[in-house]
Image 1 (cartoon, rainbow, N blue to C red):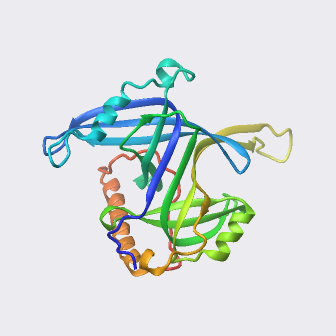
Image 2: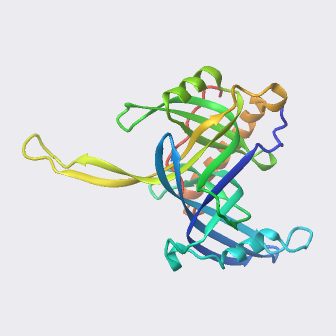
Image 3: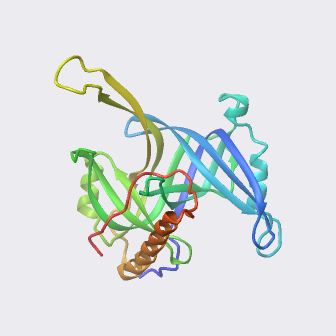
Length: 299
């Protein structure tokens, strides 16, 4: 079996217009200067025959020097980003197109003011360059399948999509749990026939961060004229486009027993996060998708 200390494949590629960027700097506990950047990239891409526009937030962090005391190239990348043109400053057409080729996805949990646990994800990057190729926002991940089930809307009605929940092994055996969406009967049918809980698979797909219109009736009773009401909600999804034909062979697959142990550590960290929130000391986290993890069949 694959060693739990061996990180899973975790690669994000984003090419699009630089909408905005904010920066702050500080000093670590060891006195090391650092830079932090948060940026948004607009990506126009086609998925399933439909054109979509996503505005994807990306986070960067780097200390000025490496552990060996040499200049950190990732720090310089943030400095270079400061010189790039954003749509916020020069207008959309004149803004730079940027390219991220070795970003990564990680889980991002926090407790909302309501006390609800919010489970989502965020994209991190170390290096950004100016780009000229076609827009794309994609990922390639090795995933341990923990659960698969049909998606339901708020009324409990099936949406026709499939949800795959999977574990991503990060640095030092840390386990993140992410939720993936499968659209299209052909893809759903293939996955349900060929993937199983406890399998380790490679998934590739699109990153979707956009807003959708929500229409509801303004009627309060059984009489009179209904007044349509419109609002928008943010959608943050990892959409599976393709992946492994079937689960990986044993030497390339994670051991379910190791995943269970790592999952228990993750549960303890989340419980501590909730305890800290009640004490009013929970750290603020970046934007996240509202998706609370639940029990899995393999537990």
